[in-house]
Image (tube, rainbow, N blue to C red):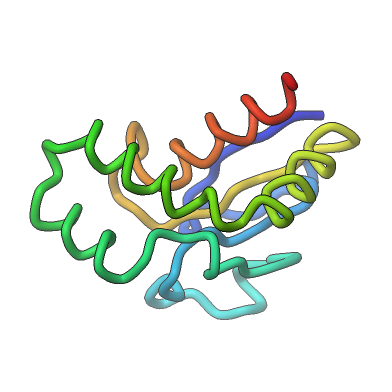
Length: 118
């Protein structure tokens, strides 16, 4: 049970559980068969404006986090559904960012874990 993070370019594993792509854009060079996703939730990915802004300003992590969390506030139902999936099994958030330490999926994971604790 719980939430895992995985780059779209890493091979899927049976241990991944329910795999959800959380990027607005499809990862380059990956086919749907290779990705083996259960769902693509581009609606909960950062808006194009925020995504492009962060690409230009990667050092503004805290501001990105705040702005992305504000966008996520509009998706309460979807977030609750993902939290329920993680409470009953493994949820893997799939992303394509090269920065594995901080990206939209890391912020989303933290937010979902907060929802699960409530």
